[in-house]
Image 1: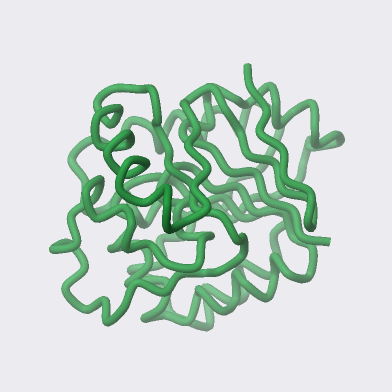
Image 2: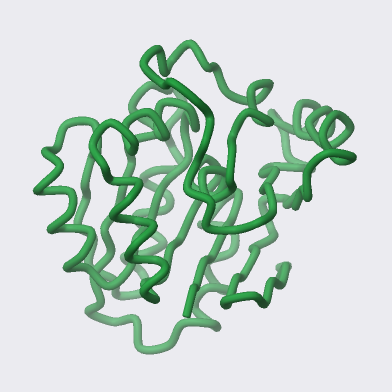
Length: 204
């Protein structure tokens, strides 16, 4: 049972999540803020954390870029959910691959663990992230050898589709890649809910 909840802005769709997932109180989340570590604007990290805490979830913050592969594997495996915040998608993928966290996440999600991906965290679930070069700086991931990502879904999320400051570039990505890739553009008020082969876009 593969379960993913992919969003542009978690705080804006937290009620959709709460309606889908019952009995959240006391459950644990591996909260991965790594994508935000190379960005100046990071308010969404604390906003996402607060939204999770309000649901009664216990946060176990794990920065992939400063943790050992063993520590990463143990903490991702022991918690109930995986939450990956927004930020720079290329830096995030670089660190996931460097530490082997990518393989741990893939295995856990394929085994049924719920994955919550916000913006960059949603983008990396696709097969390849090259399509977001216009949205994020590749220069922040100098050691990333290729753009092959987690491949957990067959579509390509385009976050912040109608929301500034990404509205223009999100539309450009859609114009450029819609004939080549199965794109799923979402606004900050949308959530893509994946249950195995069932995919549904929910809105506030």
